[in-house]
Image 1 (cartoon, helix red, strand yellow):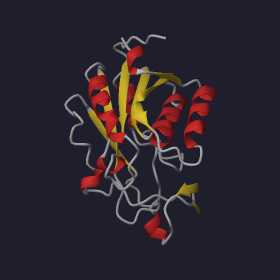
Image 2 (tube, helix red, strand yellow; image 1 turned 30 degrees about the vertical axis):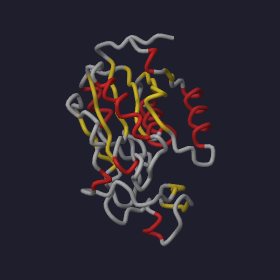
Image 3 (cartoon, rainbow, N blue to C red; image 1 turned 90 degrees about the vertical axis):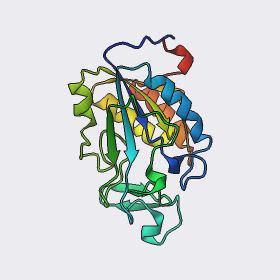
Image 4 (spheres, rainbow, N blue to C red; image 1 turned 90 degrees about the horizontal axis):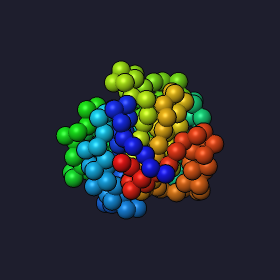
Length: 209
């Protein structure tokens, strides 16, 4: 299927940051491979936003905060939370965007996960599922009707952002080859199944015109 990019289409680049790329504290395998693809996509869209994980030290989602091992889970006030290695700490080199990511076309940077008690995978809503980040309002004000997504990681922050974009009423397309996944305990398969269930489309770079 071919997808034509139009004036009501927005691109959201999700969390292309040093800590999610090789050498980072929560590196996604081959994560830096999305950088040139994100750059190429940004040059083609009239509306471009980017999300940035921005955690304070001692964040509730960090395993070290609880004296626990990474990748286990705990129950917080808003539900089950995966415990991650410390990552994307505010002001740290790991929180910075990848140095090769071209930010010139990015018109809005949305920082998320800054609440020390609440994680935020999605660019639209925090993990308590009640607190809005403001991204929906920004895209609506810009006249966006369809949202394309790329970045890291496909089965967590990209997936949650896609699901919330769809819930907000946008048509949503995930550019699969411009994403990479963590695939933790079958999370990738689960994310793809949820895309199908919720009417979230998937494409590849070559499908865009």
